[in-house]
Length: 515
Image (cartoon, rainbow, N blue to C red; front, side, top):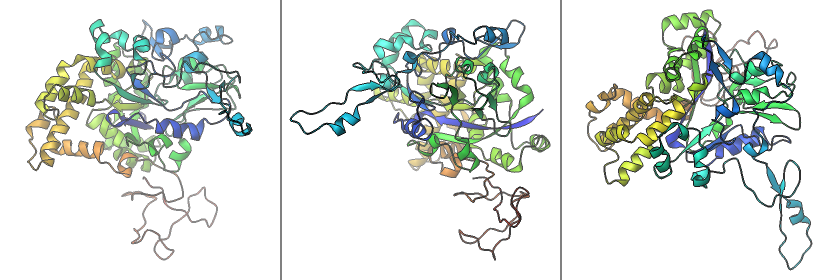
């Protein structure tokens, strides 16, 4: 067993209101430069829908992710080394500008420079790439927002193709939800293996996948290799770019900018410990439906003494082990088992997970005149409403409805159990028992999903020498054996601290902590 650490994210889809604040703030922080006009490191898709780029889930067309050979080996779906070299100068599996969208702007200078006249000046749309006029805007990064134009493009949703005809014809009338997407920072990333220059790498200390701009030669094999289509090509610099998980912020103990600015507070960040020796075995499972369970098995319990001992032996810092023990991501994925990975059948072992939405079921039950908070009604509806169940299974569990149903059932029982408590009644322990949980587990899960504070949602280890807001004291940490101050600011008389070996002599620094 080789223990490694991974920064992971979980998103609660019931809380997403489709406001795109995360996308806009990410755009302003990372992709507001020339050559990045069409890039959206974070985008929010309406489901059902075709997504961005258009139809990115259709791996029969794009050849992203891994495939398992008859001998049990994993090779990139677009081909191995020889196949990559054969098409290195002409990659047929790349999305075109029409699959993304041709970014446009408006002639704002004309509005400002037009002299006074009785006629109102106009600012025509122009392409941000070519400067040519665009008389008709026919596609955008969220063209199917709120099922807009769904009757024209709904049949292009690859997930719907896995469902029966009856479900496909009625799905636009049954439910809708929002799906925020970023780079998955996978444990087994295809983009890393596809790069002929070795420019894409996965950081050993936190698992973040980055692009070395100096080594990148613009082959764009990473773009086709990524099944989530979250690697982009900068046409101005000739380099590949992708989501960095805001690693400069993480290193300072701050959450990603999409998490910080999220209106619905639906994102959770934390550390996961996993067995790196088992990654290939898990990704090579014969049945894609077992990939979710197998991936969850290699996520190690950070409270297990054996895991802690091995993690220390493998060089995982004490602060990271403590962060893993307090991780909300670990709680949602392994303890409560309500978070699911996005398209595990791609065999990349994604590390951005999702809590599936219960709202479509509740809305349907309430619209039918029944009690949408009664656990008996909800549990019966979840098992009978195959439309959202099968669609969510196509997104998160390679078609296996059992894990999705378990997640939705636990969310439903939590609503019913907590309603009784808020109405002044004692919690009925029989309600959580129906899904294998206790009343205490239900209240802990409710606290994490509904009213979690900033420090509960983002547990990020940091090596920053500055004291971040909301810092927590670590028990039994060799670098944090200092008394707590009675005030927010510590004075020289209150505490004395030694500098780390990397700091200049005489420099006073603060201890490594976890916020």
